[in-house]
Image (cartoon, rainbow, N blue to C red; front, side):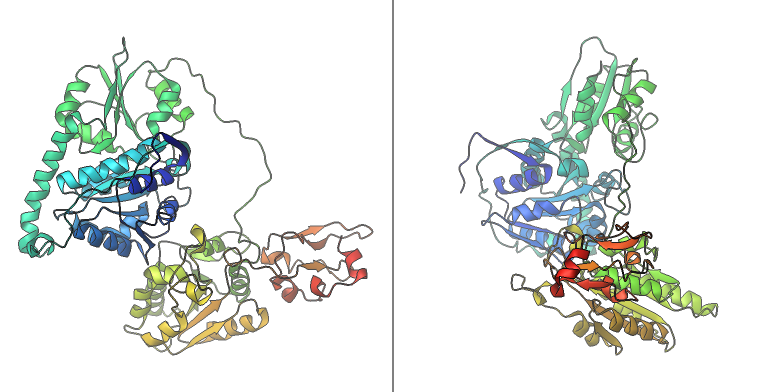
Length: 609
């Protein structure tokens, strides 16, 4: 047990939640890596007294945490907002139960879609699931509210959602560090089967329990110190807000009173009426959906909000000031819109040496007209220079979509070859059911080529392990071969290739895309960052280069066209400090102008800048 009273640290919101879990005596934590909440489990893993894992997907992560709660230990599941969609099936039933050990679900919402395919507001999901919802405004509250959430969960036998947003997840603030205190819970699975066996007879009773629980939580909300009223003399305007919006509002310091909500659901109707009745105007400041605004209006409390503020994106200080200016609360604006200056554009690119690059270069040259994409690093194939993906919807969706698309095309006598792409992490997350479904009502001449990109890590979120990572290293304990697994399902046309062997890989793609049936290509190439790909760098002989740009079109960051002394035309060049030696550029060069530094001689060295 640590003893660090009076100590303070600068922590991100994610780190603060992790610390709050630890100090609260948490013992089981699970997640699937997804920005903005990845760091929570990574930090919890550093505490020896707890068990933490990155699960196969969010549904499994939630179930692992549910199991811990069943036994009586404080348990936490963390995921990004769309991860709650995956976990919704067990969640919507688990919230009916009388929680044993404290249970907290962390939902990382993403206003502005910094790293997400949608911008859903999971406060609505929390209400839908009959959960109490707490909404911290800084790192200190992120830690404190995590601890309070466990206390609320155990007091009311209810799962609690801790809702946090991307900017707060990653921003830093000073946080007080306290001792770890493990509650003296009674451990063991409750022998009362009716408590957790949610068949109709039990669930019917649970509906009344949930209602009573919410009524008690609303009573608790009346005077909880999670909410606070900051009154300002001489104003007839009240602003109700929560989370990071509170801090942004305080920066402006307008002449208004503020009711800051930490417990945003349920809201005490009695308390809301008492406070609102003291003011002529009530304005709600919140990002995304008008959640608090709608809750107040359902109570019959007159208020305004979204008519002044955007329904999408983050609300920064200047946006809040503009909204309050429109509302007549601020007469003269003090801040200014950010000055935008022209900068060198830096579009997202695959990393140097990324194994996905040769794969998509080959697919593009194959002239495949329809490529169904999925969620992962390879989503970048939608952007230049490849511009390949026709759709990107959700984790694992490419497999089901390509089947439905092919069936629709077949009904209209359209036999265009189809390509679907899925990564290894996504394959294990939610792709396997789609593969099994491909076997249902399969036709011999349905031309579908599925490409599984096996770089043996969950690369997009920082290189967390997945079920095939153990094939590449000794640290990870799962060693599932995708080809073997797919064969066991009943597929008989599976090719496993190394995409860095460019010509051989291109030939396999040509054959499989032409094949009239379902074919699967598993491309094995390690994530260049995770596994530190670093071979002798390559360089260009400008006297041989014909300026065809074949190498440039692969989109590798070290490659560019430059002016060499004494040579009129621009020729390709390779930044040797960026090159990791993947050799793809040399393999696509039609005149062998690109060479490995492993065989460099003095004459070549003079050519190489």
